[in-house]
Length: 320
Ligand SMILES: NC(=O)c1ccc[n+]([C@@H]2O[C@H](COP(=O)([O-])OP(=O)(O)OC[C@H]3O[C@@H](n4cnc5c(N)ncnc54)[C@H](O)[C@@H]3O)[C@@H](O)[C@H]2O)c1
Picture 1 (tube, rainbow, N blue to C red):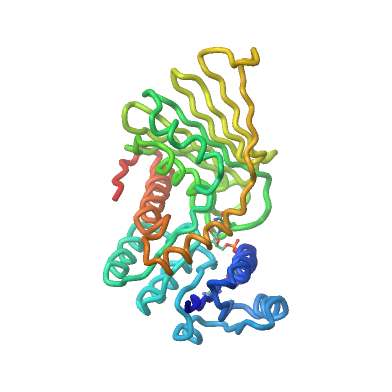
Picture 2: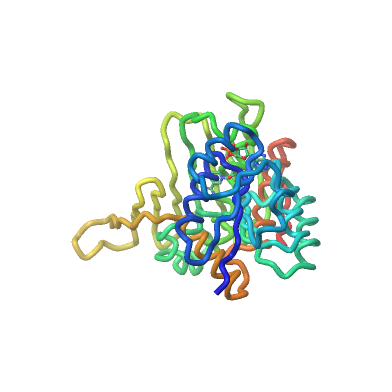
């Protein structure tokens, strides 16, 4: 079997981990190149991966690869993904797929003419908890309410983008993935506390069947919280994505006499699973597990949220 010839674009915080996962798949992937724009990153890449070619521009190696992982800043995703698709290369693009609806539409038009795998890095879908809960969430009695928190103290990372593109996109995508009821409209407000971009956002989403969701994201919080809570007439389920625990309270007592059931679930290597899926799709000619439509819908929800924050009014959602 011929191996997939791979490049990683961007040797920053996450690009380093992607390189590690490429190496972990050496039975199916041949690690050809790292494309890193800046000298400091190139030096680090050369020293950590002496067997891999390190270049500053995708053009230098595009004819030597079959697939690429785009792990560069969000503002560069569109141009790099476009170039890769135009050269008929398989693409794994870290979230978000691109910066706005217009770019997403252009990528869709290009991708439609190519027979390649385009996977988007919505890694939060890989929590083991969703395997246990997704079916339950899909069949919840309506109306139900969802509340998601993703806040942390300031870490100084990803300040080139706002918290909606950086953090809320995970949760907006999870809403699409976990629940049957789709978003209808979005209202949101935010605060610029430390940077010139939104550092905190409270996003209210009206879902079908009179359901609702509230997503709170922030990068200047007093403590780290990553959880999802669902309440309906059947009771409450809370998933702590930070400590990997599921808590459940139903209308009746549990067998051991308690009112709250606590269950731990295993922490997984999401990136490793994403790589495994990507190679599988390429080698078996299968659609991406999280593909263009998912990437576009997440970008659209981000776009709607930003418009709602800027205009202080509700924005209607139009999913593809
Ligand atoms: N799925 C997740 O949970 C998750 C987590 C973190 C980051 N991300 C995404 O990954 C991407 C990268 O994030 P990061 O934290 O690694 O950023 P980073 O700034 O640490 O790294 C980006 C790297 O790309 C390089 N670069 C910039 N432009 C380039 C170009 N045109 N060609 C090649 N290299 C270029 C930079 O020099 C830098 O080394 C972002 O889109 C972010 O949203 C996803």
